[in-house]
Image 1 (cartoon, rainbow, N blue to C red):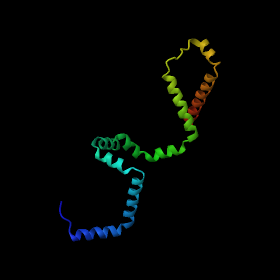
Image 2: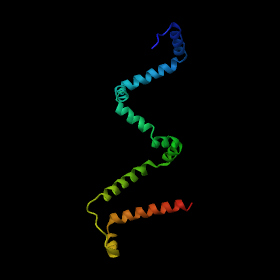
Image 3: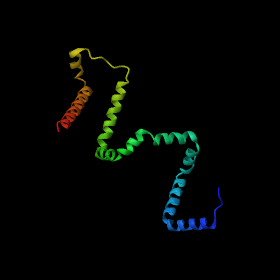
Image 4: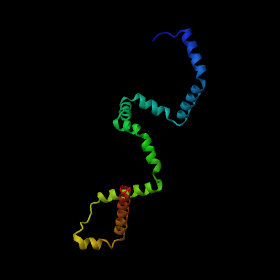
Length: 143
């Protein structure tokens, strides 16, 4: 490393003077990160080769690049979501996933057995939901 000269120091001072506000904001950012206890984990992640390489692989993955390329349409789609309905949809999906993994799934043996199942209020409600979803999908594709 070469020794810095007086000209180098003057150049740094001129640059610092011209960019004082940015430097101040950067120092405030670092202070805020330190106040929240984030500096040490960040330094640790940068110094740990395995963690750093995993982060770099993630950032440079095709999936992340695809997200970045499509970020505008993703944000537009997310802005259209009704978050109250989304939480209901997630709860319904979780219940469906639990049913899929259940060990005691009963077979439906024929049309009479199916008709008997229709007396169950939960099945009636579930079928109503399935038909409402199918109707919504159908009306969307009829546009």
